[in-house]
Length: 370
Length: 98
Image (cartoon, rainbow over all chains, first blue to last red; front, top):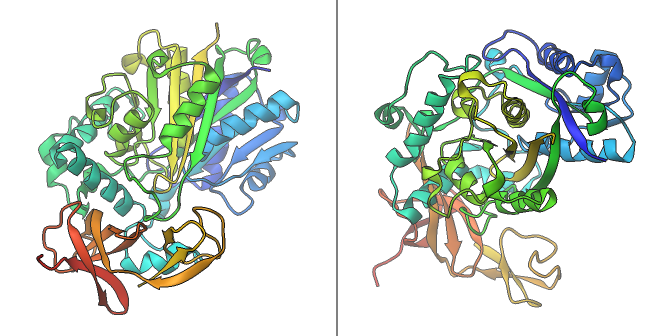
């Protein structure tokens, strides 16, 4: 059975002063309204970041008793994984309408930490935490250092990623940096150094925000108000939790995740019109585009294929886990709803989520219904 | 610095585990590391009064470890380093000239 995304929405973004569950409620009800459905239609929930019992917690808060749920945790990649699980659950008949949602109030609550996420009893707590790396920045910084060294590039080359993200956000009224005007390479280079070679403007934003998407069977989605966006393929890969595990910093799990998604969809990178890629840090963009097959190794900074059209985590919104918002922007691009930032005739979109320190990867390929 | 050597598949691993992640065997023996390696990558952390350099060092035996670089003001990837100890922690400093 083919499965489609029938609804997509953001909750309030930026600095909201709202609780996580209030933002979750906005995300879920707005996505359902977008789909022409109501809470009474929902029999599947996938979410995390609320509490130990995240899906159950959200179900209780919304007065639901779903027949299927998923609260897997794999960092910001998990929302793309939820699409795979939801598509399978709908296809197998365990449920008919799934809401995948996420929200964070991390900017309002000042809850973001750079350190202190090492969990007692893990090997990382014993063998890595004593060296006081910033988590996750120092890992991405080492990837960036290796990338610049390998390809003979400079910090200024990477800074171009932040500059481009800011430019794209000027076309997205919902973006945190909308209306703030362009950023220059010099400004990125002059920002306070955090973990070299990454400075403050090489890092994603810290904002409140979130969103939701609604999945149901394609045949049902065709009877709903908005044009269905079909789930064409998905793939994922888990690679490591430790900063010393990966044998090659420049070979991330995005390679396998992307290949698995393309194989399932029967498509190739050349078929994709628009990419939504988790831009946690500037380095994540060229490396991700290369891993997913949109550029040769070392050439990810010169990709012209439209990507991160809303401004991404660097310039639009980063509520701790970006994954669900990658799906929201992909859906809107495929529906042609993106106004000034619309990619003309976009018919295939790829969303790629990443969690932790390039620990988890998940790719979803979406398409217009033909 | 103690590594594990797998007598079944002849690979080294770090940190210690009950099984060899290369072959799944459990014929693992503790061995002293040679204490030599190269810098895979590094980052200078600026969130403390005195910045410090966190690095991945590829040991000659194969495993990669997270560590600090000391007495290396301008590290570069692939430079050779050798083991030292600071406050009971294994760290790495420049290799002695040949």
